[in-house]
Length: 454
Image 1: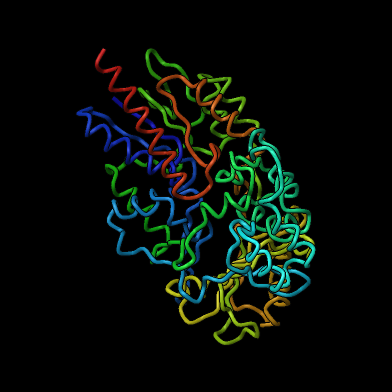
Image 2: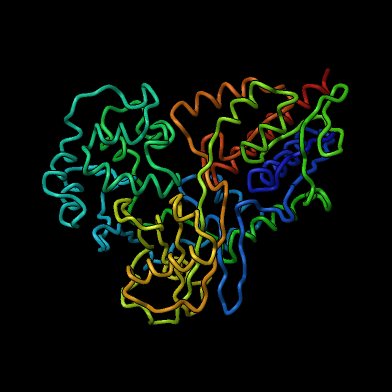
């Protein structure tokens, strides 16, 4: 039997490995083939050694340690000793507001004050006025229906519960930073899943908050490219075929045809638009739902400066930008404070642009604009000695209101031996993608095992 995986991002590679392991455990002879249209595996996990001791992550630079499948997979492929947490000096975060960096105080989860004390600390940090802090502090006392009864826009729910000021100044920058789009575009069930069913945002976030005595974010010493390489190496030689577009999945006898191969099952892990076109001949209803998923675009800009060139001390992980600042950058990570093992003795910053107007500029103009904006915030460090950008035309799927219901309906409409997996189903982090790919692969292997028993 054969299973074809479409897409060699982290979802597809994790799914391919899981399929091979599950088949072996079930005593099922299964060939697993991964087809990737691009010239390299890894998808958005893109690590580049640019020389002079600098290794750049153009995609995600960390994953949430509280979600177990990220750490577990790293350990299973033999890279557990390469896991690193954010350096102690890189664990504070800031918000740029009014041209000044304000520290995010303890007690905020996704920007939501989890107690009256957290709201007071936000006032003292200059993030909220006294009135705005009081409005946020009384949120647990306000009546209201359970959150997520209907999948309203997250911004609407947050504004109703916390008031305009806290919603705009605290939560909106976090939502934009995580989802790459305004909170008005994202359904509350996707943006704040831990709050669903609760009447109070503060109480829900307090019940699920991350402990503050350790870093919740993990990375790999050599960059996430080492994880991609390990997953490819875990599969038989030649199983991952790059530069090989899959195109459409078509019925062939009692199986399917895809990418010039005859196969018994297909796991599609390409981005939603490509996945929709792939499954359209065999699952038109599911394809229609995937076609409706929009993506945000972004550009990642890496800037390197000589050591000790910054006026502003890099005493944290970086800063988010209040949308009212009118900058092209949405966030700037102090990469060398977070991950000194990747940067040598230089100061390295990593800015992200999601603003459509900023993204409309050409590469040189956008890089220059980002360098100027970063320079003003950080105290005029001068020209960087390294300045490059990478664009992602489909950076993140947008989980519009009702997204999860639509995805449940879409997956229910798939044939038994066709599965889809990936961030577009509802989880954008590395552990979410790993789990999605593995779950889809296991369902397909179970279906193949049942077919073999008949």
